[in-house]
Image: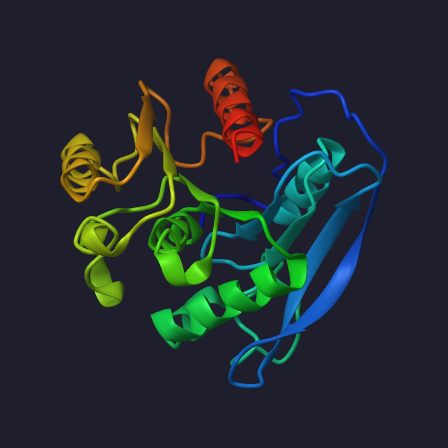
Length: 245
């Protein structure tokens, strides 16, 4: 997972509007109810954002991120992945991730993403982190209807039980992609980012992939000592990407 319980998103922008936020429950295509957290701006200034968390699901970092986005005029909703297997919505430090993550499948995750996008309304952008970043890249496919997708440290290649990744599916992708990576992320070597870049270029997909030298996995966090410049630049790139949609 990317973030501990006390992790918070960087706050590099002054709020431009009031917000309202709270827990909601969504229903996926198979009838599964799952947890989400929604934040709405008093004055909408741009597209909505579907937030796809890391492997731990819907915990505090992503709820706070939804509010940070709403403060900038973007309706945002962060989703959980475990409505089919977990008995409650708590994703604190005691949540037994591995008991649930092995039961995930790509179709169910993508159905949940679609349910969140439909609830939020269009235009919308997908924004994911780690496992969520990988799924955000895949959500560039036309059937999702996203105006663009953003992935922080999403593994683009073949990975473990999840099989072929965005690199292998590049010919199926369409919506513009912003990828943000840490140069010191041992789980995503520079070669994997380069291969993703080449595959997207060959497929004619509009994209920008940015690697921050020396930044680790999970660098986008208020307490990431020594990486404030990377955090700020990444946040400004996210806002600029949203503004262009």
